Image (cartoon, rainbow, N blue to C red; front, side):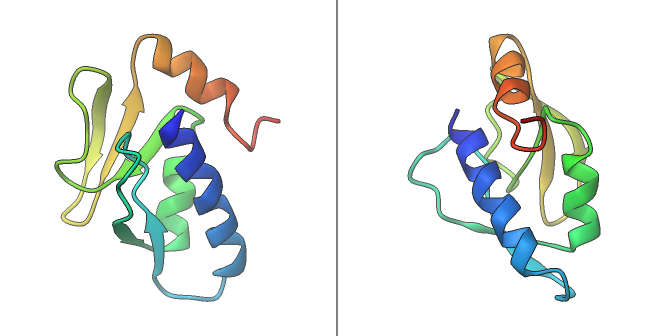
Length: 97
């Protein structure tokens, strides 16, 4: 659920950053105290958000017990939730409501 909350914040950041080359998104990891930023283009973020069960996190912020790394760059990882977290992520996706 924490990842989904950060994803909603990032959706709003994206809305106001449409003309920026790079935007500072919030890491969507499960650590409730994490406030680190991920530098991405809008196109990169849209690529991640193309699927409701994908999140962007900083390297090392993934949880191998519930996350599967599906893409890796030098700036961020794209993860997808596994197990029951997958259903929660899809249900809480702001683009699906």
